[in-house]
Length: 143
Image 1: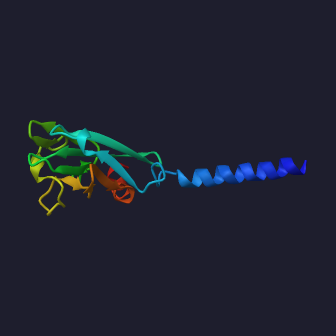
Image 2 (image 1 turned 90 degrees about the horizontal axis):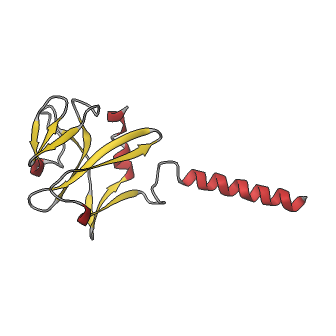
Image 3 (image 1 turned 135 degrees about the vertical axis):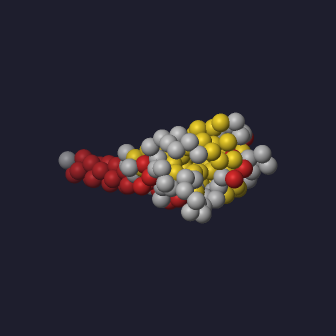
């Protein structure tokens, strides 16, 4: 009987510990998302991150210079309800219709109205690295 109690306590501890490490704060026990560079092209690729039931949407694309650009699929002004779509070499807001060159993405809004919300990233090796905490900072745009 005592062995069963000890085993059950161990099992409960394991379940609690495991549950605490995969609550949406990490992905595969990491603090970042990796997107392989060879997965990207000049065609926009859309992604989602589930943060406690809120789908935070973002995208990645290569500029004409081969450098990756990342942004939230949401605008600082229009919000995240409709997002963006690619039209040729441009990104177009599905809400207000404003159009942006892909090569200009990846910067903070300078106060000029609609703009794909800034999502920082860095390139390490053959991957685009986006920190989970940076993705989570965009959560308010999708509530």
